[in-house]
Image (cartoon, rainbow, N blue to C red; front, side, top):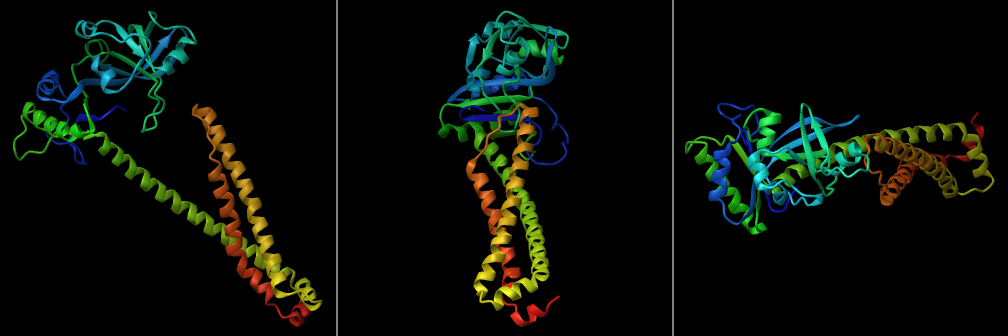
Length: 348
């Protein structure tokens, strides 16, 4: 997302529906005040975005179109792989230039160099001046390379039809400067937006650590829910294995009695039924892993995302299958080992 990144967005920083002026977007005065008042920063980049269909000839792709200034590439640590980014003069003049991501290049230009070629965004056409280096998937799961970057003024005039700024990204010089930049940004924005001493902010300012903390907490909750579902599934499966083995012991009572009568040890009978339970679970585990990998591979193909297999996850799944057989198969196996040979031989 960028180095030592601080992000300011309009809207209340607390959860709940917006009230009063919470929906006010930023404007040029807010951005200029930040540029003058902030120190120890690499860049300040206002931006606004919109989802549009990008079209080249007969090829089209739904993409994220962002209006930004040249500092955007510095703040986001995004290098140009081919061609060049638009300049400050281009940004001030609102020229019809754009920089595209690798996904747009691959899907729409089909291997051709896009530099100097036209790209249509709705009713607006721009000339490609550069191609961004690949970034891959974002922390939120979206394709960062499916992007078109325009000069902010061009985006406001030709695409959005307004002068709203929905995001201000700031890059501090060092990690030690981030907290000061956050505090100063809040002070400046409160002043430019005329927020009273006791009034709540109508914007939010977060650094990368706060964003990662939010993502981590969300991931922790999801992991807990998935673990609970997996635990219930293992419990239900274990009870099913126990019932099957209890039925097997009941149906083979006479066989068990004969084995015990001719000298088989109780431990041998116990081992026999434990092995059967474990083998049954391992077979189910193998089928489950195969089905899971097949569904994952099909999903990766249709979603065009990489298919990666972690061997330790497969080994862990296989091991859990055997462990479930061992735990839930013990009671039926112990029951078979403790049968009285005489009573077992009488069983019909």
